[in-house]
Image: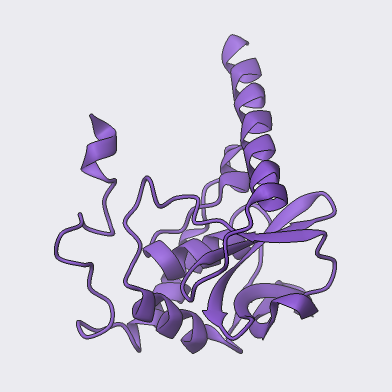
Amino acid sequence: MANFFKKIGDGFQGITKDIDNVLWNKDKPMPGDMMQFQMPGFQHWGIYVGDGNVVHFSWPAVSHFPLKYAVRKEKVKDIKGVLASAVYNKYDQDYVPLPQRCVIKRAEHMVDKVMRYNLAKANCEHFATMMRYNIPISGQAERFNFDVDPDFVEELRGWLAEIDDQKYCTSSPNKSSTYEMNPMLEQ
C-alpha cells in the first residue's frame, strides 16, 4: 500500500515539474527541440523544426474506429487549445539526443503519416521522444504504469527506416549511444 501512495506522490511531483517548466521556461526553441504545450488538463508534445513550426502527432482524428491521428506540421502559434508552451528537452539528462539534423529530418518525414492513437500507449510524447532520442517515452503514461504499444513503435521505426542513414542519424562521437541510458547517470 505504501508503494501505491509513493507512486501517486511521484506522479504529482512529475506533473508539478512539467507545469513549472511550461510556465517559467523562456528558452528560445532551436530546431530539433522538444516543445511542451500545456493544454487544459494535459500536456501535448511536438518537435520544433524552425521558422515557428512544430511537427506533432495530433487531433483532429482522421479516423474514430480505430482512433487515428495524423502527424502535422504547423505554426506553434496556430495550435489550438494551448494555454502555454515552452522548450522542454526533458529526457536529455537520461538519453543522448540524435543529431539536430536527424531529429528535424525524421520529424518532417513523418508529416501526413496517419497512425493509431492511444492516450496511454501511443501518444504525442511517445512520438516526440522517438524523433529526438529514438526511444518512445511518455512520462504522463508512465505515471499510471502504461507501457508503449510495441505495434506503434514498429510502425514508427518502419517509416523512419526509409530515411535514417549514417549521414544524418549517428550520435556524436563523444557521447554515449542514443539507445542506452547515459552511463554517467547510472553511477
